[in-house]
Structure formats: C-alpha cells, structure tokens
Length: 291
Image (cartoon, rainbow, N blue to C red; front, side):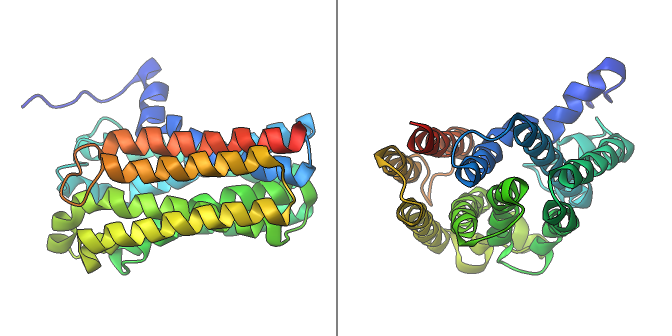
C-alpha cells in the first residue's frame, strides 16, 4: 500500500481547503444570506454583506477544524474516514491550528464591526461549534445538535444586520436545524456498525436505520412547515412559497435516491440535494423581497 504524501509548500492551502470541505460552504451561506435579506427587507449594505460573509466562512472553518482535530482518532479507526488528511498524515495538527486561530480573530473582528450583540454572542457560537464534535461520544441526539450548528447562520446574519433577535430568524433557524439534522441522521447511517463497536452514538445506532429514516422524514416535513410559516409571518410573496414547494419536492426526492437498504448514493444526495435546497430557498427569498 502506497502511503499518501504529506502536503508541503504551495500545496498546503488547497489541501487544507479540501480537508475542511470548503466548497460545502454553499450549504450554509445561502441561509445566512436569507437571514440577512429578510432582516434588511431588501439588499443589505455592502459593509454588512462583506462582514457577514467573512464571519460565516470563518465560523464554518473553525467548526470544521475542531471536528477534524477532535475526531482524528475516531476517523483513523473508521474505514470510511481513515484516509482523511489528519489520520493519513497528509496534514499535521499545526496545519489546522494556525488557520483556526486566524479564523477566530477574523470572526471576532467582523462581529465587533457589525454591532455589540453580534460581538458578545460570537464566543457563544464559537463554543458551540467546538463542543459539537464531542456529542457523538455520549448522546444519540448528536445528529440533531449538528443541525443547530448550521442553524446558527441565519439568526447570526439577522443579528449582524439588526443588532437584535426576534422570532422570525428563530423560525428560520429551526427550519435549518431540522433540515440539516435530517440529513446528518441519514449520512451517519453509513457508520452504524462502526459506532456500535466503538461506543459512539447516533439516531441510526440507537433506533436502527429504518426508524432513523422515518425520523429524518419527520424532520424534513417539519423543516418545510417552518419555512412556509415564516413566509406567512413575514408576508412574503408567491416567489418564496414556490421555492418552499421546490425545496420540499427536492427533499422528497432524497428518499428515492437513498433508502434504508441502499445507501450507495448518499454522497451524490448530500452534495446535490443540500445545495439545491439552500440555493432554491435563497433565490425564492431574494425574489420575494426584491421584486
């Protein structure tokens, strides 16, 4: 077996970005932008757009770095994840700690430049992102807690614009938490056997894969209900509700691609379904507010 080469020099940056799945920021950013557009009731200021974008990317980077470092021993033992960058030796911990420290400074700076509430709550969000990876060690609700890690984004963006937090962004964050938790339940059904052998926890490990899929469907339905409710609460136009219908249909299609007895297409479902749902809702919200 040929051992992977350690990343060096100019290869460090692209290798690091691959390690934290930087391209998957597309899942979280659209919902942050939805929170920003709804809070602004139109186009945000250029300052808010730039600061919120940088803060969100920094927060996600911190969360992924924490996940990779904290779970490196677990990843090394799991056949599905053993070739990730830390377990395989392609990158060292220092390659994560340095950009992680920089991302923390950038996050706090952006929050400070937005408003006082954003600044004072930024350490709370940071603490949650670092705490989350530990939860799989003691609770099956870890999948649901992952959903809330992503759900920080829309409420944080709302706070970034308004400097206050009301019910509207909470409903949006709840929708995101249910949507993200749903897919995380299915995604980790791949590891049920490994989790059982190593004392780790997930919905699939606790209740079985079939019941995990049922719970995932319930969460998806709840997510769409929250999104539709938000449309009525904020009196959004037909464009938004059309987006909700498309997003709901896309989530339903997920269960055609992936079934309890066939998880082979889970990678394709993860990338395409999640990206389509978040981008659809972003486009629909933008049209509803701006047109």
